[in-house]
Amino acid sequence: MTKLKVALIVKGSRSNYDRDGRNMGYWSYAVDEFEWDHFHFGNNFHADKKKFHNYDLIFMEDGGNWGHWAGTGPPVAFMAIDGTLSKAHYQIRREQARRSDITFVDHNELHLFPRSHRLNYCVNDLVFKPREKKLDVSFHCASGARKGFPGGRERVDIRQALNEIAIKNGWSYTSGVLGLEEYAANMGESRVIVNWPRTPSNRPHRIFDGMACKAAICTGVIPEVSGDKITPSLHYADYYHNEQIGWKDLSRRLETLFADDNWRMVADTGYKLVMSEHTWKIRAPQLRQILRKELGL
Image 1 (tube, rainbow, N blue to C red):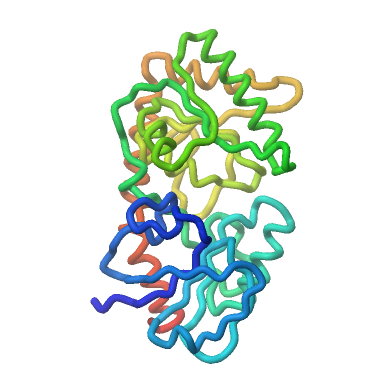
Image 2: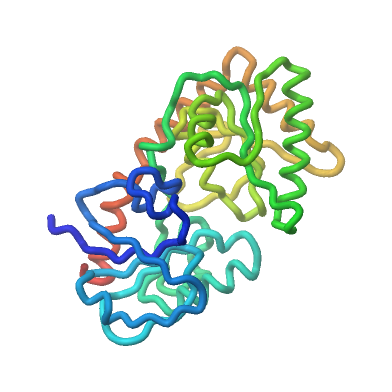
């Protein structure tokens, strides 16, 4: 197989340039289907595709680069990920998709984007992997409450509620925003990983990353996404919240998971699913197949 040469347009942070230490699975380690170089433009860019004449494809990752393409050159693919966070998030991503030749969508509804194809999130299983289990519960969702980010207030409340729940049950517990290396280590050492999606239509990457760590995921309700192939109560546990019940359902779910080590079954089934369906090694040939069919690459 001849590898496609890809100009990968990424955010400017180090974690997006890393070859093996990326926080996302897409484009995280060497595969047979592609080779790629990283580029970053920033917002409001105007780029000439002729500058990329040595590449077969320009692939734009979600966020950090918004702008226009001019001239003739390789086709442009856009990856839409965070369009479920707000109307503004969606609109800017739809506009970038409109300027592209093909759009890949993680968990948004496909009909919301032009020329769209599902490309479910995949894990960097070199980073997110099982480790010796030393922690009972971890919660590392950034809140952004002070900046008004959706779900931020709830995430602050959960962090406090989990502390009380852990003390009551004698569980070890860790929370807070961490750098990637420590974050991945804590995930891998956790028996149960708690998650709260920012919006009802949001399915965070943490779901799959946690499964790859062979931890039981306990999450607020997440949407059903075509291609995810995940089933509540089998691959993860979910919990509900409203003003009447507060975080009582979260407490009950955690107590059930730790009773008779039930967390192990959820962790095992989630791990098997991710390793068979949602790693970069698996996703890369699926992406190549779509590009071959739709763009002749």
